[in-house]
Image (cartoon, rainbow, N blue to C red; front, side, top):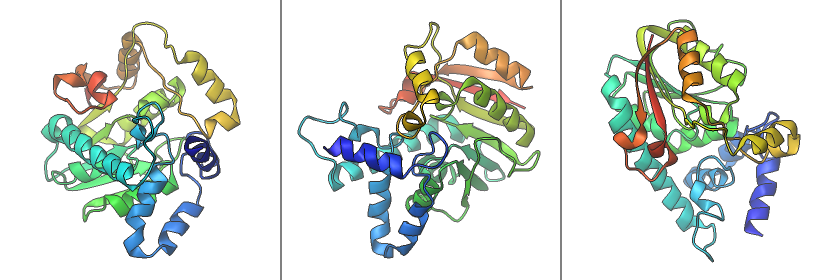
Length: 275
């Protein structure tokens, strides 16, 4: 019953486009009308509805008999803080200094934006979900952090040569090839000369077991509002797109080389690019 309720809420609170979880414009209104002392808790409850963020609430990830309550929501909140702190320290911090403007592409609820902001001049987090952007403002705000609502058709809100560093984690795996190629070209446009990109891209040498599931999600408007497609890519294809986008590949490696965070990112590939 718990999972059925979450699925229903996931559907009605989604945005118009697929994968725009918590994209319903009623969510910021609801959070604004909620007394300040209750907003943090409500933001966590809303994030628990989405399949993106609090993954250990899913039925196959929690202990049998546990219910989705305040305890688990807080556990997921602190798990996200800890894992994004490790990603910031090990993968992003070496490329950041206090003179840099940084873009967090697909920032979600802002845990990584908040962690990176300690080392940067400014961090802009962008996401297509108006609801999750509002949750980020409540849970992970900062003087040098700004959250901006993004679009699925590009990064037109940002001028050319705007950022010193762009990073993206757990985002490209949910974009199809056309979207992946488009956003990498957009990174090239908005990155300053000599700027860097750090991107997480899951690599598999054989056809993805998710291929049929992805087609089902893409072709069905109901599924697009409830489920997440997972795109695994071949290394030669990714290297080709990187080159055609105009980037120089500096390095690529498994996240486990530097991370031990109990997150899928630790087991998958990270690419470091230079403009």
